[in-house]
Image 1 (cartoon, rainbow, N blue to C red):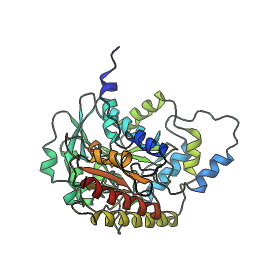
Image 2 (image 1 turned 45 degrees about the vertical axis):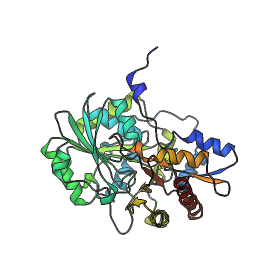
Image 3 (image 1 turned 135 degrees about the vertical axis):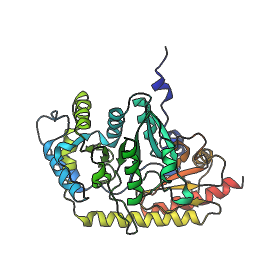
Image 4 (image 1 turned 180 degrees about the horizontal axis):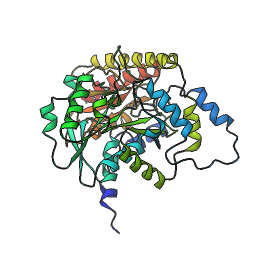
Length: 396
């Protein structure tokens, strides 16, 4: 029996597809440091965990399709701190950022339409696009210039009759890029000129370093009618398993479509909305400590990579990932080798091959993404293993 093209063509995640090799290494008695996935070791806030512990309702019932009203009202208050002025009816609660991305692609595109996305990009955009029947038009950016956006003429070369939107991740996964106001205004002007939607995945909003600041596209009034923000609590509160996100837009036609999509899957998780709501009023001190910790981790990883001959990388300004270009022909082969053939003191490390973060064939084949989501002690050991492993791999 023949499966659908969608089933046959959907891409395997470079973050997860080598997990069986990691599991085999563990079964063989090795300790594996996981730097392949954005699962922080920062503790989930007690405010959230206490909701789970104390929940005593007799029935865990359906909620509204667009999300609980009290949570959406409080989210609107949260976003006002970021110069995003919205009301609760302009927020649709989703099953994490993943459903928000998928709903957005489904709402702005017909099958065969295109979305321009700077690459490397969050690898699951590939999967969401395949589900939606959407083609990604990759806009290649390079580590050598900090993965910054090219000029408008280069972006406009990708626009054709099938182009419906430009999508960015800001701060970027996997690059750690934080877009400047000038870069955002460049995209705003292009979107207006060519009648495109502008989609911004802002999941890592809080995680910006070195005095930089995050600018949301929803704070730029010129694009109110075509701006869509995708968000999630997964990284903000180190609650990846809670699966609560949202879509935000001022565009009423889009909101009407999102509500109908939401009705088709009934409702987002009820208990998790209570838990997420409990974190809305966490003070700046909470994030100050976490950001300081991530910045120290970033510096450790960046310094370790800079001390390896012929490795090219740029210090990330946000999120908690770094892309490193290695002096190898096939980074995936190296990543597999670390898991199957190498260990230091019976320990090894797992990172993500970066080819899967690109849409252009052949791009990223010599790159890896490293997620600096472990504590300083474990990260120090992991980077030593990575460094010594790379030297041994090259000297085989």
